[in-house]
Figure 1 (spheres, rainbow, N blue to C red):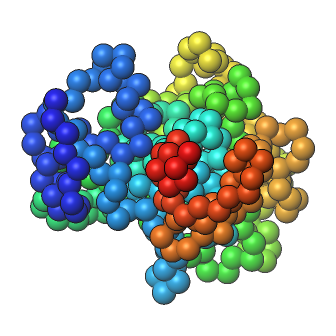
Figure 2 (tube, rainbow, N blue to C red; figure 1 turned 180 degrees about the vertical axis):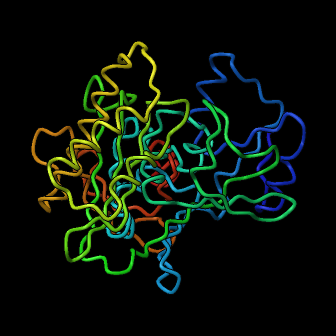
Length: 341
C-alpha cells in the first residue's frame, strides 16, 4: 500500500488517475469497506487538506457553492446553508452520529452513490450541479445524471468531485416557496432510510404551482426525481383532488424492493404519504406539523471565520476553553496537540 498527500488539486488528479488509486477524505464509508475486505486500495490519495472546504454565496450568479470537503456537521449548521438551502441542512443533520458528521464529507457521501443517501435526495430537489475536475480539465454535471446504479456514479477513474453548486433563482412570478424534508427509519437517529423525501414547491399569486421538485431515496437503484408527479402539478392549484392524485402517482412512479428495513409496499405507502404531507403543507402555507417524522431541528449555527477554524468553545474538566482549529480535526488531536492534555 502506498499513501500520498498531494500538495494541490492538480497533483491529486494526477495521482488519482494511476491504476489502483483511491481517493480518501473523511473515510467514513471507505474504511468500513476496507475493514470488511470489500476493497483493498493499492494507492491512497488523501485530499482532506486541499482547499475545498468553503461554502460561498455567489450573489451575482445566485448560486450557493459548497466545497466537496465540507463536512456534514458544517453543512447542517452553516449560516448560508440554513438561509439559502435548508433542505441540505435538514438532510445533513441526520447523517450518522455526531462523530461521523464531523468527518464525513459531502463529496464522499455523493461519490459513494448509495440509493439511500439522504443528502443526495435533498440536493436533487435543489437542482444541484456537481463540479468535477481531472487532468483533462473541469466539467459540470446535473446531479440527476450523476448516479448510475448502487455504488456506481458518473465519476470516471482519475476524476475528483470538487464542489456542489446549488442554484438559488426562483421561477418568475413566484410569491412563495416552501420546502420539506421527510425521513422514515426504524429509529429517529443513526439509521439508514426506509424512505426519504425532499420536496420544494413554488407558487404564484393565484396559488398555482410554478414548479415543483420532489426527490426520493431508498425506493429505487438510485435516488430519483418524481418527474411524472412534478409534471402533473405544473400550473395546478393544490385542491384535495390534485393532492390525492399526486400522492397516488408518487407511489406508482417508484420501483422499491423489500429488504430487512421495509417491504416494497410500505415504501410505496410512505412515499405517497410524504408527498401528500408536503403538498398539504404547501397549500396551507405551513411547515411540517408535529408528529410528521420531520428530522430534529439543526443545532444553532456556530460563528466562525472564513477559514472554518472556529473559535470553538469547549468545557474540559469543568474549565471553559476557547480553541481555534479546523472543524475537520479530531477532538482527540486538538486535546493532545493544541491543548497539550
